[in-house]
Length: 349
Image (cartoon, helix red, strand yellow):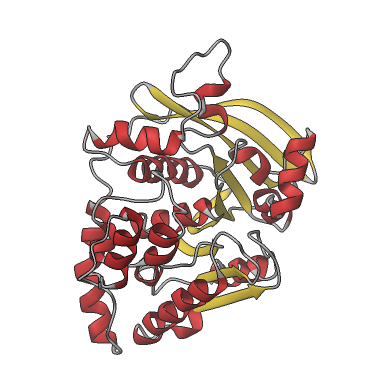
């Protein structure tokens, strides 16, 4: 038998031969209910120890009007000794509580800025154009209250942007660096960001202009990861739009090495695969957006993921609550069905 000295090849071999413990293999509602009840608690446990929620103590830093919207930038506490900044946009002419969407940003240096339409520099404008990235702004223009915060290590929470900041880790991937720091404390970066997202939903649900029973999440790429996990961990989320985050762990993690410390939790692939995570969102409405020419998540494995999610939604008896926007585009927001999807999923029945 030939010897192997390639660690990369070894990971690929392990992934090829691996079947997660709770990969969905049923076809009936009873099998789906049993599977979900067994897997969901275990998935949540992989997030590790979570902080206690403090009083948010929110403070509106600035408020202005543009694009027919009332726009606010605010700061609030997410745990003792740590805060987050956010934008909240709402239609200026709206009356009564409105449905709200937490718009999750993906990777990139600007955090929430591009998602909420900040095009004040050529770099910001190019990011928005390249990824069709300003879904937080566009969904607010469509009539929703929208909110976006910076995940840890991004935007206002990127220490490399602080004046006179010196850090020997300046050139390292902050997602991986903070994952290591979190892990020695029994935490994960994904768990901490889910916690911060839950704090953001706390704020939204406290506002008189928000209908707390009509909350959605959406996000592109890493933002799709966050939309997935916030939906899994917070039952206040009534619908989700996952944009260009459909794949298999064997492909984008093991084969393509297209992952980081903010996207994964210990033991996750031992339990399940990405389509199982998406399927756990059922019975709630889910829109999956896949770019045919996405170079981050290849179309073959992206569609393989979606087809398995279809089987889960069918077994759950809610196939009509799963939608696909397969658009001819790159790693970007398709923007073809999001407004109609959330209008229907978050309708005031």
